[in-house]
Amino acid sequence: MRIILLGSPGAGKGTLAAEIERKYPVAHISTGDIFRENVKNNTPLGLEARAFLDSGRLVPDDIVIAMMEDRLREPDCEKGFILDGFPRTVPQAEALEKILEELDLKLDGVVLLDVDEETVVRRLSGRRVCRNCGAIYNLFFRPSSKGDLCEKCGGEVYQREDDREEVVRSRLKVFYEQTAPLIDFYGEKHTLSRLAADRSGRHHSLLEDLERAVGISE
Image (cartoon, rainbow, N blue to C red; front, side, top):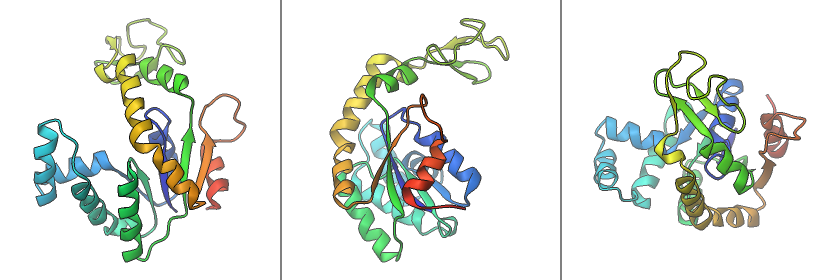
């Protein structure tokens, strides 16, 4: 399985990727993980990226693409991979096509997790986390039965700074401006499948829907 997962923050890409990993021997590749690994190991690319990250600037495409190429050459990608968070822009998508061509690899599909904006806002702005054990709740979908205290350990349940509604809406705005054009890019190539990622009203798991969409089975 070689797929790209597209979707806004809160669409459920990480959750679906974890489901796929439990069933298939594939590598889950996210740009965040790649940045952390390279910075932690002080690789030449990691040192370059750190200079941008420390100053709050976006890491340039050429560094991101070089990191991605290195990652796709690692042995655990031979049985397949899930790209989560890359590509973010059309130029990155064009660069990825060249990398895959050089590696003689072909994508099985690009999957867009479709969720309406207000559902995403409720998912993220409603999220609450226990300061003590890290348990996650949601004011709208799964609140703690103990209010502001954790059901598991009694610790304080709080809202993270990046889960505030205004921050969530700002992140969504960036997604629509920068990443949404990828939907047209892959749509024109007839490799894009849309999956309704709203949990309500679905009779199949999202993984089953994905398998059907890209024509993959165990």
